[in-house]
Image (cartoon, rainbow, N blue to C red; front, side, top):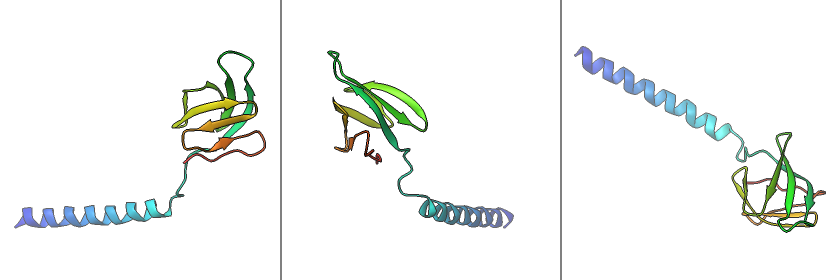
Length: 97
């Protein structure tokens, strides 16, 4: 009988924890990815590259690189196209999904 009580209490605790975590997930922001900010592009070299800031850290990327879970599809003057077809420009920066 003691084993059945312990199992029932453990099951109740798991259900309570599950409910708490479900509420926390629902309350969390839908898009938690940090914003990517285009700093500059350099297309004068054979392999163009871009400087992109994520969480106040600057990354130098080229086409085909992965940054923040996004592939860099193309780099043009003042324009970077990401794998989800969003475009970063110095004036308007995309929020990755």
